[in-house]
Length: 332
Image (cartoon, rainbow, N blue to C red):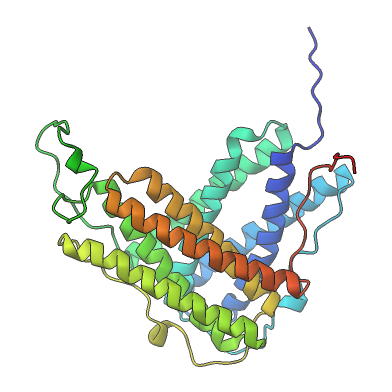
């Protein structure tokens, strides 16, 4: 029995390819700029690998879109990067940035994977996921060799198997119940991502040309810094201190010459906001302590409002490229 399959791209497949193209054209601009200033040879090799992967992704997506008769998105081009700009970030920031972007890439590829059925797109997604995991492992090795790895806090091994008998395990509001290992991990990872976000926001505010864009990034720096403090306070109250790896005064130079267009800066921040909402959503679904759920829900609302304001700036300046849409069939 022969079963005919519709080989047109599905909504999942076209949205995945479109997002990869936009994000990787942005990454190409960023990594080309990084490579002009990274001094550490091991970190430079990582950036070269990341750049090569993004360039491969772009060629693959262009080939598929051309075959399907789909217009190639504009994304980001040489117009969006100033390779003559002075150094803005330290080598240490660059390697933490790559670690963060790799985590985002793995998350996006793995979320889409179960919903892809066409062989060529499935092959591309799988290869993309494998190569990104490989890059993550290379970055991790450099972290370990250079003593840059900030490990999540340690918790005791459980002595035996126990079951929870009291509702106070969930309704804990006074901080008496210890954090679970998963809650600890969520607080730790969100502290690190917001630390990176604070540095990026400070740097972008420093170089942005538009006053409105500059003010937006300053607001982002304030939000990220506040969130880091909230998460660290939770950990410290439970004797789980962590080291924050990046400092604005240390890892962001005083250069005011922008390496990127305001359009790229704003889109980059939009990606960070989306990633933050996703991370907080995972935390809310993973935590069982009500105080954590309440705090992360409140902070998610703050990020969503901030992201909405950023999207409005992109739209007002004709910087937001419209993603693929479903058909509109409603009769007037």
